[in-house]
Length: 96
Image 1 (spheres, rainbow, N blue to C red):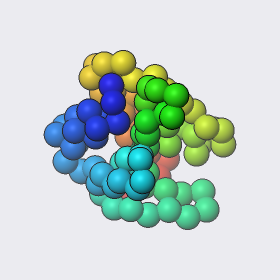
Image 2 (image 1 turned 60 degrees about the vertical axis):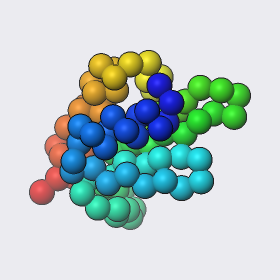
Image 3 (image 1 turned 90 degrees about the vertical axis):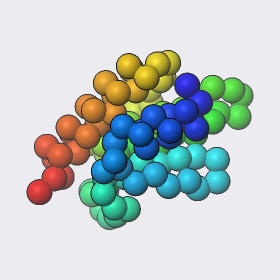
Image 4 (image 1 turned 120 degrees about the horizontal axis):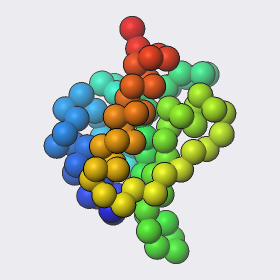
């Protein structure tokens, strides 16, 4: 999937997510854009690779593991599964 296809899917299926574009990447935030040491409302980000394809970063997992975790999104079903997991992790670790 392209970054624009991913953005469209998230925008359509997750009304609580704020989509923000910066240069050639989209980022997806839970309710608001907020970040600080050890805390962020960013759920994921996606950008087109210069060599082709799309890079999807699992932002919550990356924050928790303190290491960049990338995912290859090949279908809407996989996107839903991965995004739902990131939302679950965010709510479990940072939600009120």
